[in-house]
Each structure stands twice: as C-alpha cells, then as structure tokens.
Length: 483
Ligand SMILES: Nc1ncnc2c1ncn2[C@@H]1O[C@H](COP(=O)(O)OP(=O)(O)O)[C@@H](O)[C@H]1O
Ligand SMILES: [Mg+2]
Image 1 (tube, rainbow, N blue to C red):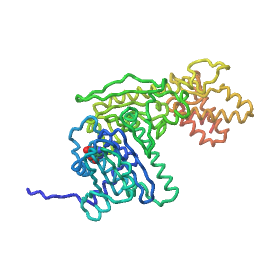
Image 2: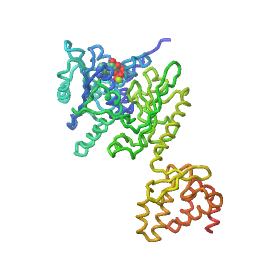
Image 3: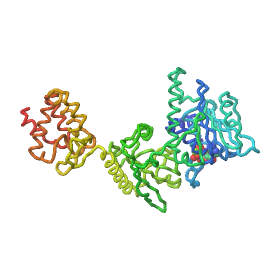
Image 4: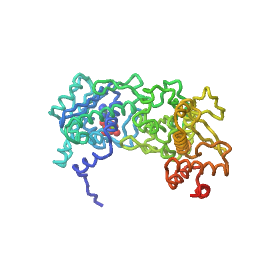
C-alpha cells in the first residue's frame, strides 16, 4: 500500500471551524480559560466599539509563551486531546483559542511574553488571507489601528498574553446604527454576566481578578452560600473506575426570604426555573449551569434545587465534555445515583417552595388567616387550593355583586385546577368528602359555572376534563347537565 496524503483544504476548513457553535459568552470564556491555566492573577477584557474597526481583547499576566510555544498554540489542534493534562488545566482539545476566536471574528492576533527579559512575540491569523491564499499563512506582525489601540493594555506587562479579535463580522452583522451599537453593548453586558457565573469559584478566591472594560466583576454564587436560609446537604462522592465525583446539594431559600435584588440576582441569566438542577464544574470552572441530564423535567416547585457536581479533567471522555465545554452527560454507570440525587433535591425544593404559602391540615382562624394556599387531600393525595378566607380576598369580594363574586370564584377554581403543583394530583376546591358521586357532582357544578361565566358547553367540558381528577367523567357530566 502506498498511502497518499489528503491535506485538508485550508479555506474550507477554516470557514467550517467558524460554525462550531460558540456564542460570544462561551467563546470569551474559552479564551479566559487559557489565561487561568497560565496562572494569571489579572485578566482584562476590553470591548471597543468603532464600527468595522471594533475589537475585543483579552489580556492576562500569566506565564506567557515563547515564540515556539506561541507558534504551536496558534495551530489548529495544538495538543493531542487524549494526552493527560494537569489538574488545573482548563483546556483539552487544543482548539479553543482558534475556534472560539473564529466564531466571532476574522482576524486573531496573539502577543505573548514570558518575562521582562524577553521580547514579545506576535502571531496573526487572518481568515480573509487564508481563504484567498488557501494556505495556513501565519503572520508575525500586525499594523492595524485596532491592534495598536488594544495593546495599550499590555504595554506595562512584564509577562503575559494578549489576544485581540478584530473584524468582528459574526458579532457586528448589520449597519452601524444606534440600535446596532446598543445591541453590541448589550451583548457585552450579557457576556460579563456569563463570566461572573462560569468563573465564580475563581473570582471568590484571592488569586484571580477579572475586569471588563476596566470594571472588576464580582462572582455569582448559584448556591447562595452566604444566606442563612440556604439548606446544604452533606457532600457525597460517587466513585467509578477509581475516579470520584463530588456532589453537593443546596436548596435555596424560599422567595419570601429574599430581597427583590437577591431574588433577581439569584435567578441568574436564565431565571429561577431554568437554573435548577446540576451545576457541572470541570476543575472548578462551571460548564453547565443547571441541568437534570434529561432525567427529570425542570418544574416550578423544583426551582430551589441546585446541585454542585465536581469533575476533574481526567473525566472528560466519560462525561462527553464537548469542545466548547458547554455540555456534559453522566456515564451510564452513575446514572441511577444521579437520578436518585436529583429526585431527592427536587422533592426537598418542593417542600420549601410550598411551605410558606400553605397551611397544612389546619383549621384556619379568621384573625391570622394570611396563608395564600391551603392544603387538602382527596383519595389520599395532597392538593392545593386558594384560601378563600384570605383577608384581602374577603375585603375585595365585599365590594362585589353576586355575579362578579361567582365569576371570581370560578376563575379561582380554574387557577387551582391548572396550578402546576396540582397538575398531576388534583382538581379545584374539593375536600375529603368529595369522593365518588360527590366528585362527579363537583365536576358538573364546575362545568356549569364555566358555562355561566361565558364558556360554550363544549369549551367548558373540555377545560374540566383537562383537570386530572376529572379525567374520564365526560359522559357522566354530560348526563348530569343534559348537554
Ligand atoms: N493566555 C495564554 N497564556 C499561556 N498559554 C496560552 C494562552 N492561551 C493559549 N495558550 C497555549 O496555547 C495552547 C492552545 O490553546 P487552545 O487552543 O485554547 O487549546 P487548549 O486550551 O485545549 O490546549 C494551550 O494549551 C496553551 O499552551
Ligand atoms: Mg483553551
């Protein structure tokens, strides 16, 4: 056999690498990873708007690279993914710097220096040039005004690296109108928020400070560890093949225990419900902010459950960590344990979530009647109904006529019937006596209330039957109401 070389086409490869799927946030985080791995104590991220000459730079005071290392680092696939890495290395595939940069821009320039005794070295990829020449031509100097402007940040550094992204065609895709400028800065603000989350454990320590356009960013702790009302479970360790995954469950405080600001902040970038689940960290760097690994659904009562899950770099392949370091999936050997931990956390969250609003199996006294929800049970299952004796509700109703009162009551029954926490359990406004025929009577009664409130008989019946405890009662209701 005489194998022939089939060298990838530079132009088409570099263009396809642009679509790996990074967002601005994940791309910048990946470049910051390199600075952290290089033991930087300060990282400056600067965004500069100047229409087509805008740039973003990431400047660190880490250990830098000599000319050889820099040349190697700029290659696509700078390292072999399967090679072992040290425990504080946040890299893996030898691709991050290039693919992250190319997802945003067409010109990537890196300058690096290992000490004040050494010169800075520069390397530049320009996609326009790679496409035109169809060759991997790496330049060793840059003369653009954006580059000169960006390197101001680096001029006093004794050691470190600056990465400059120019020709930001993927970020600035439109005109240079005021709206486009506004969107650019909004995306920078979102990126900043992302960094406060992804690197929060580094930012909370003494060894790293990150600045975005000169402003130091603060860590965002998903677990509200400083709040006395956060419940913390005992840590547990899941072991497999001689490796050990650390798991630490937190149940966040009930919303009523938080100030408005704490509530908004802790909701994070995606909001309370989205941010529940496992927080997967790799070498202390957050890669997935809230997932149940498709084992459970994210639901409203589960929104207080957040679980720290710590992986190390030698687990990348077991957990299917992707190039962008933004997804993970547990190895099958751990799935049962993970599911158990997830269920326990969701259940604990549910209890806290409903506790403040509920009066459980308790006769309500008129004078301290401030609970919004009460619990009742039917067929041995618990469900929630609105406390009709709430002081504010009574006051509001006292000014209403009979007709309006009835409509309001019907509406509350609908709220109860379709309340997420009742979804699999119950229907509206019934108590222990509502069994058997009583249940059909109640369903028929509710249906006729809806009809009276303006629903067509068909719509009313459909609504009633969507409530789980009335399932299958269609014929009986029709019979009763002679529909
Ligand atoms: N800011 C930096 N400081 C020092 N070395 C760096 C820096 N950025 C990149 N490097 C070097 O370049 C290599 C390639 O980086 P990258 O493409 O992100 O892949 P990976 O991080 O997976 O190794 C890194 O392994 C590192 O040796
Ligand atoms: Mg990297």
